[in-house]
Length: 352
Ligand SMILES: Nc1nc2c(ncn2[C@@H]2O[C@H](COP(=O)(O)OP(=O)(O)OP(=O)(O)O)[C@@H](O)[C@H]2O)c(=O)[nH]1
Ligand SMILES: [Mg+2]
Image (tube, rainbow, N blue to C red; front, top):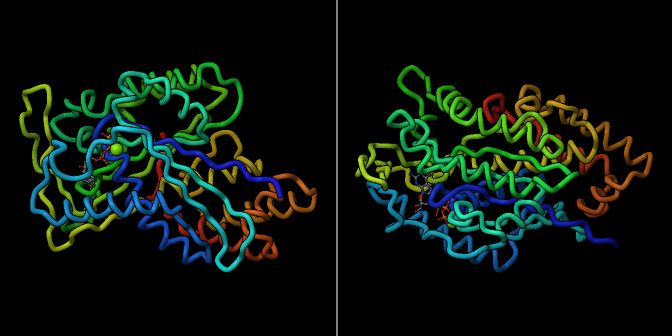
């Protein structure tokens, strides 16, 4: 049996935006969600140990009353490249699995255009570009450049893909620390649309340039989703606002504690986009937002395409068959994929 290449996903973003935290919370949510689909999402031993340790820190941080972004509390800044390995298979089947690897690098590497970072990015199938939502939204976005460093990230993508002439790379923009803007007020409204508009407005030039320079590697849409990594941290103010190092301060909801929400969205997007492209159903302009309008329709289309590929004995079918351990195809795979797609809600994704 030939090995299915690992699906490699790079975590992208400067220091302290929450890359490592997103990974921890994503695993916590996804493990549960995929179990509902009859799938196993398993962290390799080393990965599980690393995640457990980081989760412990995140949970302790979330139990305080206040949090200041100064790297004195909470998850420590990453100092080396770490690979987080997972596998995905159907419960009860010993067949081959889909292997996933998230590569988490120190944010600093993005600022100094580290060559290892460029290599990782260029070899990845997708990237989760983590953006601190509070830097975009608060104080007129004055600190967005220094906190989210859009220019450095743009340069990183440019360096990674300028010499690559084929192969897709999906970018999923992940708005982290977003709970302040997703909570509902008394009238049931939230500030999600405002947040998405701010993102669009602030990043449109960078995205436009990325698209025009790297058009063979990027589709015209980039997916966006919001995540709540701790789920209980609400923005209060910027401390030392007039210095070079403004630090956001958050009030934590102690009753709620660590309550991640929406963190499985980025991986769901990466998985479904990979499947959709591999199976050829993703036409130009395809995005998770489009799927989001009608998850059931997408599931049906995906199921039909899988069947056709199976009949024609195309390689992707073989891969999918192995991924789900040789279970009678139509039922098990279509079922898992349908459930995954149907779960997508209208407000899960947006596009830029
Ligand atoms: N307010 C708030 N803070 C969070 C949240 N999730 C994580 N943090 C805090 O943000 C800090 C930085 O997060 P990390 O995940 O280490 O950031 P990173 O992008 O991996 O940073 P580097 O490793 O330095 O590149 C941590 O100390 C966490 O305690 C959240 O949802 N809200
Ligand atoms: Mg980190």
